[in-house]
Image (cartoon, rainbow over all chains, first blue to last red; front, side, top):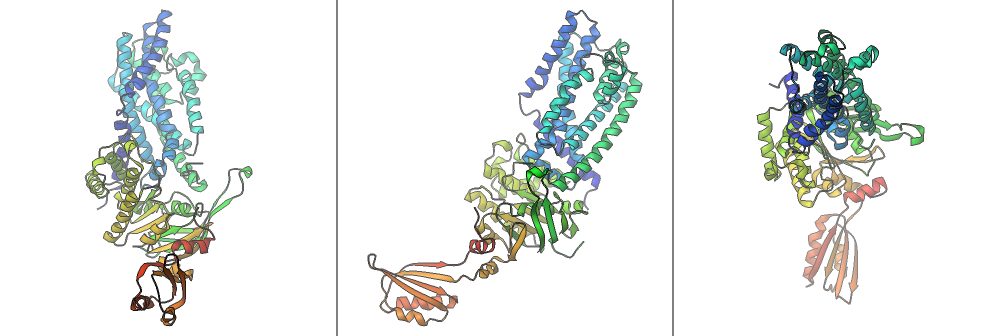
Amino acid sequence: MSDSWLIVNLRAIRGRAYPRVVGATREPSWVFFEIVLPLFTVAAYAYIYKFMDARGELIGYVVLGGAMTAFWLNVLWGMASQFYWEKEIGNLQLYMMAPISRMSILAGMAIGGLLSTTLHAASTLIIGAIIFDIVFHIGSLYMLAAIFLATMVALYGMGMMFASLYMLFGREAWHMSNLLSEPVYLASGFFFPVKYLGAWAAAGASLIPVTLGLDAMRQLFFSEGSQDAFLSMEMELMLLLGLCGLFLVLAKYSLQYMEYLGKTTGRLTLRWQ
Amino acid sequence: MTGQSAVETRALTRVFNPKSKREGKPVTALDTVDLRIESGELFGLLGPNGAGKTTLLKILSTLLLPTSGKAYVAGFDVEKQFLEVRKRINMVSGGEVSGYGLLTVKENLWMFSQFYGIKSQLANERIDQMLETFGLSDKRTAKVRTLSTGERQKMNVIRGFLTDPEIIFLDEPTLGLDVSASRVIRRYIVDWLKDNKGKTVVLTTHYMAEADELCDRIAIIDKGKILACDTPERLKKMVRMNTTLTIDVNAVPDKRVFGTIPGVGNFTATDDPERSVTRLKFVIRDESGVPEIISKIIGQGSKILSLQKTEPTLEDVFIKMVGKGFE
């Protein structure tokens, strides 16, 4: 008896996640690029706050923001622009030809990316906390787990949507990812509380799940975090759950549409186009 | 679903439109192609670059939509029933660099097997067996980026056959490979069909000898149109070229005896006094006359120095059909 559609797709997810989880740790250079380098950025902001004799939480915000940067970069470079690269090496047509849901390929990419990036982010967080003597006061572990998971599902859901939208891109995918990386550091408040951007700007930036996730996690990690909060963490969790659904549904339909468009125009598989 | 054909196309047409008028006119890659490939066949598509071979394979493998016409694979419509088609096919292209360089050969193959839902244990058994067949066992744990071109292509071919497809599309599978690697791949294709009755291979190739050696039937395609489709033998007969037998002998006292041999259409004898050789050239209509030619030469006490039989090749057929050879 052949396996069910669900089992086949679960195997596909595992298969696609595998190179991300295993391959990412095969190059020793990843320790430098993924852990040491981000610490320099974190240190730069931390020393600015130290120089200004700012509150201790602000340095903690920077370390947490630095850790979350890894996920944003992974979504941009490891999810959104991934299909362009997969098309270049000929993998995309093999994925498209396989008898599985395209969402399984994206989910495998997301889960693999999430697992390997969690290791990088956790390393940045722990080393940063040791260097800058950060003390975390975690209010509720359940709430933290819920917010982190919701942030990740929404963020990688957004990555899946970008991946399908980028599918037919050529080199523009590169430019688009470049365009989105730096401004989001500002808009999402990676190194400062997003509240200080003003309500309208913070509300706009909340479409990027990491904005809400980071704001809520700061409230959970630091006892005085709520005074810098944009919204209550319960509200942010609800909004994140909404974004999870929104991005996953958008990813599914945009992928379907882009695949159809690619098959019509021939841009799905032709590497030189 | 249609009948039992592995592949069937009806007036299949594919036009590529340029992104803008400045980029030129629309290109008709396939022009009302009607084709029927039976299950169990090793079917070849021969054509120059840009003839439409790859476009046809891309449509059959559900990666491209036709502009008009219909295509069925294993009886399923490639447009509407693409999932059923995908369950039954796989494709391998020449010069393919798919997979991930950081993974080992075995890991890469396992990964692709997972996209077809094959249980890990079964996949690993098949991979070990196929690596052995292709002489790649010692590369099992080598990272893919360390493989040579030939090794990499063998891995790609394994990837295609690993999922045990009903129909496999091979797009120039031996492109750029050395003789040894090409031979291993060709041998595997033939053995696979022999061991798996009812399975089908659709092959595109630039190599006439490869098509001649492997294919049960060949379609010659140019500018999106099928110009001829038949067995290699029948295609060669279409060019109406005679078989020529050229024999160099040391001397022939009486050349007139060759004029009366049944099945011999024409006969010339050219002497080369410097080398003391006479070249006899026979146009053979019926090969039953060949033993008599040999016996008449030997009967006169002459010694055969060399013998060469020239038959029409697929290249002759191709040139006749397309009006030019492969560049």
